[in-house]
Length: 533
Image (cartoon, rainbow, N blue to C red; front, top):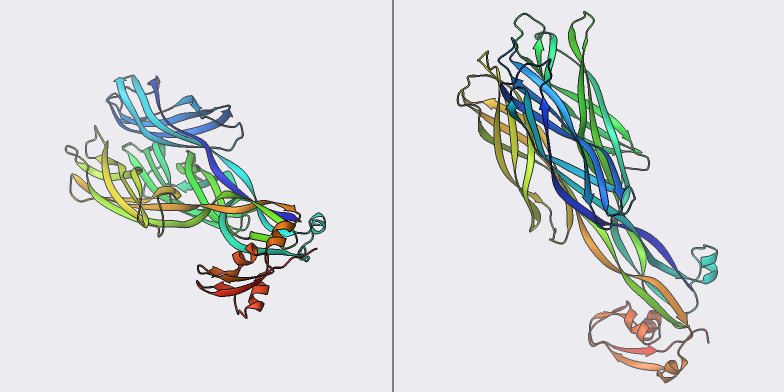
C-alpha cells in the first residue's frame, strides 16, 4: 500500500527589520535664482531604485526627491521654486536572510523639512521609516488516500482498495497565495489651461495625487480606476505676472496584465505613488496652455485562493498492521477582507495675520498611531496631517501655508477576529475639501478608505506517511471472536471497529443499527474479523 499526497504551500515570515534613517544635506541656491527670504512649503517623496540582498543583510538604494517654494524680496516675482534630491544607500541587518529576491521593502516619509542657513543656502532633512521583510514558502505533503502499490505506480484513480483496508476522510479548508507580482501602472494624459485663465510662463510647483482608487480582477489582468488630483502653481504669461493656479481631476481607467489571475482569486493590492512630472507645451496657437503629465503607480499584487481538500483522517486494516505517522501543518484561512470609508472633519486655523484671498491647494498624510484587536474588530487611532496652501491679498507676500491636524478613531468591524490572527491594513485619502468659514478659519472634510485583510492561523494534524507490517497473530489469537461492548460515551463506531479489529458494517448488521452513531450506555456485540489469512 502507498499513501497518495497533495501539496499545499504556506508562507511564513523568515526575517524582518524596521528602522528609521535620517537624510540630511545642504544645498546652495543656484546663481540663476534670487535669495531666499522665507521658505513657504517643502514637498518630498522617496524613490527606491534597487534592493540588493546578501547574507544577513540587504542594501537599499534610493533617493529623497524634494521641491520647495520660497519667497524673495529681490525680484519682481516674489515666489520661486527649488528642486533637488539626496541619494542614499542603507545597509539593513536581517538575520537569516537568504539571497533570493523575494524581499518587500515599504517606506514612509515621516518628515521632510527645509531650514534656512542663510539667504543662499538651505539644509534639507527628513526622517524615513524602512520596513523590510522576507517571506519564505514551504511545501507540505498531506495524505489524501491509501491505494495499492500497482495503482500508485500506474497513477490510477478509482481502483479497488487493498483487501481489509478501511479509511476515513475529512474535509479541510485553507487559503493559499496563488500569485504574487510587482508591476508599474503608468498614467499619461494631457491637460489644458481653461479659457478663463492666462497661459503659462513659468511652472513654480505642482502636486499629483491618485484618489478614489478601485481595482477589479478581470481574466489575466487587473483593472484600475481612479482620479489624479492635479494642482499646478504658475506664473502667467501676462503683464501683471501674478500667481495663477490650476486644480483639476483627471479620471483614468486602465488594465495591468497579470497572467494567471482569475475572478475567483481574492486580491490584496497595495498601490503606492512613484515618480510624477509635468511638461508644458504650446497649443495650436503657440501659447503654453497644454501640459503632458505622467504619474507612475507602483503595484504589489498578491492573489489568494480559497481551497477545500478531502484528506485521509484515519485508516486501519484487518489484513495487516498499519501504522500512521502524523504531523502538524500550519496553514492560513482568510477570515475576511473588509473595506470601509471613514469621513472626518474639523476646524483648521488658517492665519492670524494674513488676509486670505483664496485657498488653492490642500493635501494630507495619514498617520496611524495605534491599532489594536478588540472583540469583533480592529480599533485604529490616528491623525490626518494637512497642508493648506493659500493666496493672500498682500502682493509682497502672496503665498502662505497653513498646517492642521485632524484626529480620528475608527473600528473596523471583523466578526470572530482573535488576538492570534494576522492582518494587514491599507489606508488612503480619497478626497479633501477645505472651505473658509471666516477670514481666519476653515472647515476641513476628509474622506478616507480603510482596507483590512485578516487571516486565521490553523494548526491541522495530517497523515504524512504509513508503514505496513504483518498482522500480530498472537494478539489476534488472544482476542475473543465475539465481544460484548458497553459504550462509555457518545461517539461513532469508527474507533470501536478499529480497536476490536472489525468493521462498521459488521457492527451495524450484527446489532441492527441504522447509522453509526453511538450513545453512552449502548450495548453492542462485536465480531472479530481477519482478512488475508
